[in-house]
Image 1: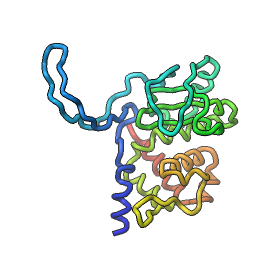
Image 2: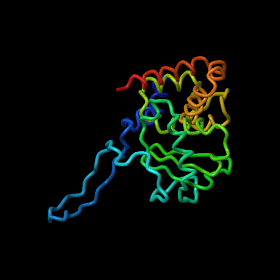
Image 3: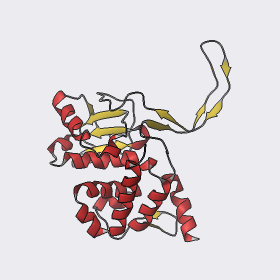
Image 4: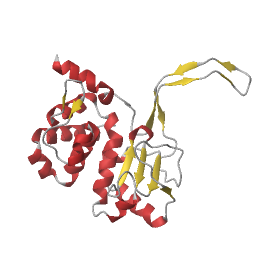
Length: 232
């Protein structure tokens, strides 16, 4: 019974946005009645959620129409030097992560905290690079972490559920996710998504640390990677 409740609790997370690496997820939305340019009248209706191919991939933009929750960065124009640094580190991604196209790559000043080097938004396939990024030594690790957030929604549900279980996530009496008591990184408690991104980053930067910390989580991450590397 507990396993069933847990599955229901995380089903929206596990099964959400099952789009491919070159697609973006468009949520269900209500369309008001309108008239086409040729005079055809279209009744109000619900447009089903669907996956749409990304028209321009890894596109560096100097502005955006997006409104971001929890952070209010100032969007700046890219300069050639900063763009080159990001491009070089994107080229160092593991092959399966490099398959995920980005609809926008933005340059922000500070996101949430001055210590935050970057942020990503899976629903819009956006990567935002902050000032702090260019001061960090291991920029590749940061890019891997953010691309893990981008990839997370499309991971096989069974593999995702296995990771959640072996990582130690549970639920409380109010059916809210409870993070593991032992955390790989302090912000792993923030969400399953963040916990996964931390584990994947560590897998590629310090495998022995992850294997020692949680051997089962290490194996779950490896299984996810193997499945993605075998995707055609």
